Structure formats: C-alpha cells, structure tokens
Length: 315
Image (tube, rainbow, N blue to C red; front, side, top):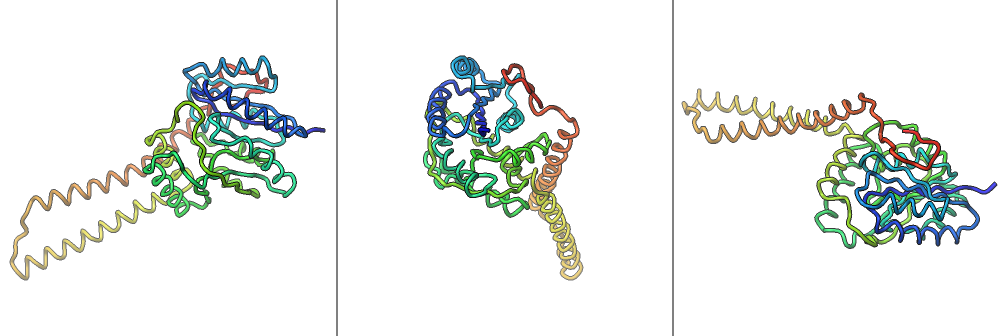
C-alpha cells in the first residue's frame, strides 16, 4: 500500500504566495512519484482573497484540502489544526511564502525512511534579509531559553520539518491551549536530524511577524517551558531584602558613632522607585504564569472552523 505525505500550510493573507507555492510543491510531488500527497491549507482568518485562491486550487486538484477559521487564531493554532486533520503516514509543516524550500522534502523523506529518523527539521544558518536588531534578539532568545529550560531549542530552527505519524500523535496528545510548537517538538523527543540551509526571502507579500509579536511569542515560549523566571524573581527579592538590612545597619552605626543624621530625600526617592520597579517586575513575571494558568483552565477550543472540505474536523 502506498504511503501518504500530508503537507500542512498555514496561511494568513497569502493570496499572492499560494499559487507560487502550489506550483513548486507540485514539482516536488511529481519527482516523488513513489508516495501520495495531500495538501492541507489552513486559512487563519485571512482578510484578503486567500480562501478563494485555495478553493480554486481544490477545483482542479482534489489533493488540496482546506480548513478556514472563523477568525485569526494564530500560527500555532493553524499548525495544530493541520496536524489534527492530517491523514498521512508522514507529515510536514510549511509556510506558503517559500522560505521553507519544498525541494528539501525528498531528502528529508529519505533520511526518515532509509536512516531511521523520526523527524527531519530545518534550520537557517544565516539570517540574510532580516533586520540586524531582530537577528540579535532571536539569537539571544535561543541562548536564554536553552539555559532556562530542560528542552533544547536549536538556534535558527524553523517549524518546517517532516515527521512520522508516531511523532505527530505524540504532539497531538499535548492538549495545552498556549502552544509553543518548537518547544513541543523538542519535548516529545524522538530521533531528529537537522538540515541546514541559508535564509530565503519571501517570494511575495510581507511578513506577518513584527518585533512586538515575536517578543510576545518569546515570552510565551519561556513561560511554557521554564519556571526559572519565578526563581529569578525570588532571588532578586532576597538580594534586595539583604541589601536593605545592610543599609539599615550602616545608617544606625553611622548615626550612633559619628552623630551624622540621615539626609537627602532625592536619594531616598530613587531607592523607592528602584525597589518599586523590581517589585512590579517580579509581579509581572508571576502574573504571566497566572495568566497562562487562567487560560488553560478555561478549556476553550484552540481554534474554531467556519468552513472546510475535510470530513473529520476536530479541535
């Protein structure tokens, strides 16, 4: 019986890139004649003509499937929906902008089937075309989270990877609402091979990720896989309590021995502002974990499907 490869493509306002992507992925599917393909496009609440473009592809190619969300739920929800809906023995996650080169798929497939890997991931070795400030913070994020958490994240790793059905089922068993897939891929384990390639710029359109969105995504990643920030806030609180105790002793001794009264409200105000800032920072860390707990306990669906041509729809 022929194996099936599911290609999951998350789309948000990608009407320009989808036809180009479809043309490239079809070239790959013709070269890989020994396996069947299905293309699952996830329309993540696009405001442009993305859904109609996908429907037009479906009319001429029944391998094209789609899920259309009721609103924008984010890329994490789109990837999860694609994994839930996939039927393949092998599953890959890709972006429609061709920053994830489809030409690597055949090599990835052979690494799994011939060398016994459960997953073949991709990582960028350069960040050509990306703003330098963004590249700097991205590198710092990977260094920081690898020191803080028990899971190992590879610098430059993309969501683009080919996985076995066993690994995908393990990922789907993790039902958390606030998802950070790069961490989840690492958490479930399995034997992984990394393919390196130079960064490729978008073929059309504009990126949907700005600095602020990436910053929030990084915070979600850290709080999802590490409790180190809570420990840091506790340590900072202890240090400031200890320093305050030392300062009180110094003031008492200075007053009793030298008769030097304490003066200077500006320095006092600065100290109050600094300590208050530290307190708010620590409260913010605890608040982030509390917010994550709050969202998880609501048990809301990760996504809501408005329209689909896939029979088995789960969330």
